Image (cartoon, rainbow, N blue to C red; front, side):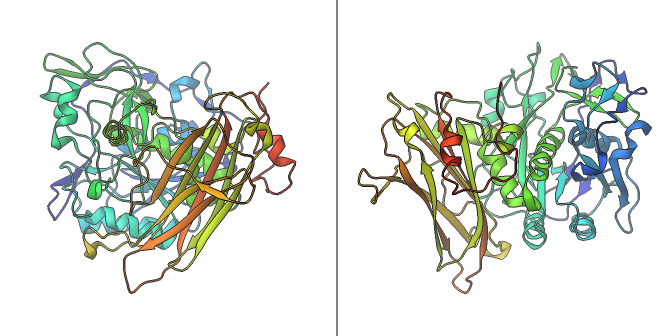
Length: 515
């Protein structure tokens, strides 16, 4: 628990007062000897300490303790770190050999009641000490009260400021509520204002993660693929969509007055005692995405954190079908689930029928970008309805200023798509079906469009920056991701584009060939 000195009452860990089913002993577990541990990406876990079983201890690069602090008990931090390192570990337990995906920098910053100023100082100290090497920071701690939304929280602002100054990426839990104790329907929980996200999940530049139930259980308020009964929902600061993504986690089963977290493939974590146990909370969804983000970052030249974030958002798998949805329905879906579930493989690779272009750079008030993408004739020659899909995601990192109230973000970048005319010269603006994902003064501009008839040749994505602080003309970094897709999945679009020799592959395995 972290006591705050302002309007928020306290930051807490979520741990259901519940019985858990029989734990699984991990005494004989071993790391796959073929894994080069030194090549695994590192994720800093800002928590109560990490106590892995001895056989997994090589995954911990350092046990760092914040200056002038005690040592946390390792209970919560170990569970969080297990999700970073192994995702859903019990899915690997057909044998005692397990394959990690990340290493852990144990940043022990939570040792009981901590005033908010000390909490912030410890986060800053951890980032300042390690940001040259470690770029990913998981923070699974939230206030008990929801945000008001008209002012950025102090901790949310400090996370944003650190990310701007150092280029690191925070992954933050959306927060948990206890409405499941008193409500009888998931719909009533969602309608309750107390289910709104809690600080620091209002941070604009952090990746905020909510929880989705991964398995059906009797007496659970949430079914599979629904928001978990404890998971907080959006909107975030000033009505912007939050969370950013979701991940599967455990649910809560009520039987009279008893609350239980049932064992299922998506609820199990490593305890500080070296056992596999069930637990629930957005605390344990955020590290799923932190590990996914680490896998993406580790596959990109120069380890570009903004590009990795854009790829993560761009390739998220929605849990709904956007076709036919009204604007209000789509907004609600985003405020419950963000963009959906992360997809590491599609974030790392193109495929023959799905080609991804990327670009990074910066914009200011007086610069614009016109980014060309090539629509190949093989795709334009397709006959039928909705034969091609173009998806665009632009993520930026503008300056922030908490003293400016609702004008917290100093700039945003608008992306728009222009398609080729029959004459091969003129460009035609492409109208979008929804406003959701394209809000002004947000850090992510995202949309997609399907096409039935269109012309081959050079299309363009136009990027334009809008700023509102009159005394500033700062360069704002951005990362752009554009995907051209053959909806049928049968055409080799990649080879057509590769033959032009106009684009450089990110790496030699950017394309994945499926047998």
